Amino acid sequence: MTETSPQPNFDRYDQRIAEAMLSGMALTGLPDYLGIVVTEVGPGKMTAELDVRKEFLNPFGTAHGGVLAGLADHILGAVLLPLIPSGAWPASNEFKINYLAPVYEGTLRASSEVISLSKRIAVMRIDAFNNSRLVGAAQGTVTISAPRAGQA
Image (cartoon, rainbow, N blue to C red; front, side, top):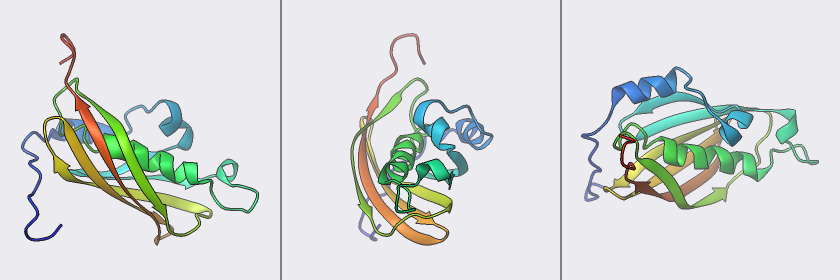
């Protein structure tokens, strides 16, 4: 961010949720299949990674772009969980990803940073690395849905 950019407000940050994410809270669906592991969580920041497995590779020996997209989409919303009210739901509206280099075996790691946060909308920036090489850059928008009655 530039010096003149407004800083997002992270007053609501819940350390207990962050600790649960770091301790391996159960994932389901695609994040579970991909084997995503959260390695760092802080106010407005998250890093997660996965091992690039053989079944993720295309016939050319590189990971399918959907693997990186799945990791990016997961941390796009998950970075908000310690920041939003209990029971609220972060739903990805859109994200754009630039594939900068092929992903090979090893570790695929992505870091998300909240660059704008209001009660209903958040914008995140994501950088992805494969074995310390920048392989992707993304930015996305998430809608924060209020908790339903009785969910908080």
